[in-house]
Length: 137
Image (cartoon, rainbow, N blue to C red; front, side, top):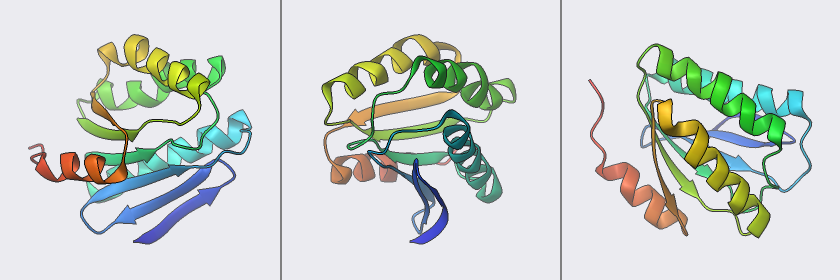
């Protein structure tokens, strides 16, 4: 795997199987740094024409209200507005509050987005699901 981008929010890697591997850290997040991290994720996906990502959220702190709002109204809206289908395999956070914040994002923000996602307990399960997905046309 090749490192594409890294900042205090996490690491973004190019997986040889054709997806972005998004690894969040447990560090507290600055909102602008968080926006930069997800913006680079968007660029990586588009650069390669990829439609899949594996988001490892095991160690991340809960999303803030500001982050949840930005994910739904900006980051996911970019893909939805131009019909760019995304598939996300998400490894669930170990922190209970982070899981609740993730549930809030998924249930309220993703209803109108182009993201199809599944939640997984392990990286192996998440990877297997991504491998089974067909490439969008």
